[in-house]
Amino acid sequence: MIKILTKVPEMRLTAENLSARRGEDLIFQDVSFDLSAGGALVLTGRNGSGKSTLLRVVAGLLRPETGRVTWHSDTAESGMHAAEACHYLGHRNAMKVELTVAENLSFWKDFLGDFAGGRGISIGEAADAVGLGGITHLPFGYLSAGQQRRMAFAKLLVAHRPVWILDEPTAALDVSAEGVFTTLIKTHLADGGIMLAATHQPLGLENAKELRMTGFAGIAEERW
Amino acid sequence: MTALLLRDFKLSVRAGGGALIGVLFFMTVVAVIPFGVGPDLNLLSRIGPAIVWIGALLSALLGLDRLFQTEREDGSLDLLLMQEQPLVLTVLVKCLAHWLGNALPLVVASPLLGLFMNMSEIAVGATMLTLLVGTPALTFIGAVGAAVAVTLPRGGLLVSILVLPLAIPVLIFGVSASYAAVEDPAPFMPPFLILVAITMFFAVIGPLGAALALRNTND
Image (tube, each protein chain N blue to C red):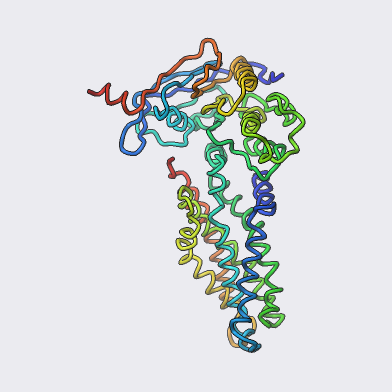
């Protein structure tokens, strides 16, 4: 269904000694990971343990207190921001309720463009892939919360990015949609993609690394 | 970038967009003046250009706070910030789309309101021309305010207050150029060219400042 990459390029997403603050306190410190093609990292932990913060740091949306995130690949020029290789699906869907689904998706397809090494699929195909083909003419605001989330996920398919950063991707979804997402994520990984996700539900991925986030309390414990 | 321009333009003219609201507010402000001032046609035609300019300034400020706030509310701002394209360019394109969708309708509506104010054809033409040249400056100045106040809930009034001092020169030179077109001894070109210069200056400074402010909104 979504076979895009012809050959898996050499690429790595590396984070070294990341730490970040929320207000005055460090919410996590010395987080390091190294993901290569096909690698997945699942963040778990209680609410407020810093999962979203870490994802936003990796996406370049928050400045880390220490450490850095780097991206290496044969196609990338040196000094490139890691964020440029990433798709970020946050709590909010980044879709306009006034526009139709097709308008939303075609805007993101044009605006995001394809990252070197792959191509996004067409809007119709992406809608089919998330199980909502045939309703792309509706305004985004008419869809239910679950359908909106599925369409926000379709956004990841229309433009190619090797790294997917997903923050609670399965919130507001029924069981079948979770299955669809898991399949899409697996396909992405099989094509040589990289995924970071914060989630409470098991995504059913084999060989995914897990990182337990502990939040303020964990740091206090480590220190004393 | 064309996609962004088209999307923003579509959003501003669709239902719930700011285009119609701005024009209605502009008409309301200017249309009540003759009732307040009274039927003194000479007085109306004398204050006409100034009133039309003030009305346009206020309505241009009206929708500006939504420039980045709507993007932030639905999460699109995150994606705009992450891209390879320079953020300055993204902001510039958003400003252009905002101007096309919100300020250009004001320019188009201004001759009609000139009639309310009993302005001569030359005064109407001059006001329209100065609005056409001056309103982009208002959008670029407003973009900085909108970017600074992007994380504040109900930052609308704050944005207007923040940017008003910077918008005053635009108003002064816009109005004086409009007057110069009808009052004989004053030359039209100097204030008009200064207005052009202000617009070009803010076309560079505005997106830079706004991009800087957006980069530093950590949340």
